[in-house]
Structures are given as C-alpha cells and as structure tokens.
Image 1: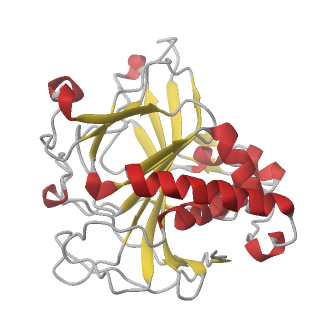
Image 2 (image 1 turned 90 degrees about the vertical axis):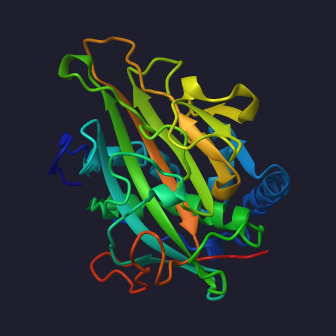
Length: 325
C-alpha cells in the first residue's frame, strides 16, 4: 500500500490492488440467494412507497451476498480521505465518476468524465445552478472496492423496471442508465468559519430518476446533524427547512450507522438535509457519504446544455457483470 498527499492531507493507506466483483461467482453461495430475496422484498416496498431506507446492519449481509469482501468493508470507510476540492463549496471535498448501467448487456461500465451541471429547471436553486462543475475523478481505490460495486448492483436490482415520471430530454428508449457516483466529505469547522451544509440549496431535486445516499462515517458530529426530509413536490424549491409546510413532509430519515442507505424516486419528491454540527467546536466535524444519481441519458436540448458522452473511460476502465432474476 502507498501513501499519497491529497486535499485532505496525507492519504490513509486505503486499498490493495483494485478488484472487480463478479456476481456470477456467487451462484453456488446460499447467502447470494438470501441477499436476492431481501432485495426483492425491498423492491416491493420501493414500488409501493417510492423510497426505502435500509439500516447498515441489514445492508451488510446483502452486499456480502452480492460478493463484497470482508476487508473492503474496512477500506470503504477510508476512501473519503481521497476526496478533492469542491469548486463552489469551501466546506466540502468530493470525487466524481460516471457509469453506465446497461440491462441489455447486463454490465456496469465506467464512462469518461464530463462536467456536472444542475439547473433551476430541475428544481435545484443555488448560487451555482447552471454552472458546469468539474470534480476530482473517482480514484481506483474507491472504484475497485467491492462494497462500492455491490452497492451499484444493489441499486440496479432495486430500480430495474420501476416506472417513473419521465423528465424532459432524457432518452427513455435507451437500454442503459447513466449513474453519477459522488463521494462527498462535508466539514464543519467553527474556528475557520465553515458550516457544513449537505444541502445548501434547501428543498430541491437532483435531476435524476433514482437517487441513493449511503453513509460511510463521521467524526465529531452531533447526533441531531444531517437529517433528511422528503417533501411533496408542491413544496417551494429553494426554501430552508424552517420555511417549509409541515403538512408537505412525506418522510424523515437520518443516516447514522455505517452503510445506512436511502433510495428514492427523485422526481416523486423534493428533499432537504439539515446542517452538520460539531460535538466539540474546537475540532472539525466530518460526515462522509456516497451519493449515487441514476437517470436515463441526456439528449440534445437538455436544460443542462449538453448530451451525455457514452465513451468508456480510458485510464480507469471498469466493467462489472450483472445478474438479473
């Protein structure tokens, strides 16, 4: 293992040689079928309620059943050490990668990097709305982690063939889905005047079809931090939680345990997340998350101003096979 200097300082030794999960290797493992049964039950809840919240202790056997290795559960808690500067927020560091989930070819592939843009027309109202943002790319230590790969497989199995309200200028005839994978570390540092806001934009949507958020860990974070509220679409975009109509709140969840996971149909709700607060204000408070947006490919005329490139990533390729029931 090596040590590298990053925006967060010296990198914690993070991962041995990256590994590609092959779900077909699990076909003779009884735990695989238990995992699939659990996912199918969650799928039914997702179909009915349009969201699921799964505690980490329930996610771990599912991800192991899909092939995630024991050691990678330790390594994935360190990958946020590799995040780089956010171009528009000084209290957050990020890495970003694009993937194609293709049910026709039964594979997940890494795509080349592209700027990331969200707009007011997509119910995202912030100072950087409409600004193309470029982030540090997903590192091999994260992409090659079997827990991360199993999470992508888990999400694909949850949302496959779930009907959604179409967004404008997305190609719903395409066999593949574009997945944007963010690793986000949010800081609160009272001494530096930094207040960590997982959702500075207030009530918003993410311009996707299916959104997944996964808790990796925290340090010095108060228990009342980072509560997620899901709002009816009638709620006003951009308002703070304190200004929302309580009768339009549809759910409240909080990621507190390792691998606590929320998946929801993004176009069925708006959502907001409260601030990150420090237990000890003399130390930095940190919250580490994976945020996974999945939607159909953009086409010309999309409000973000560009279509999706479908070229595979040349420097850090990845192809993970999928198994479909």
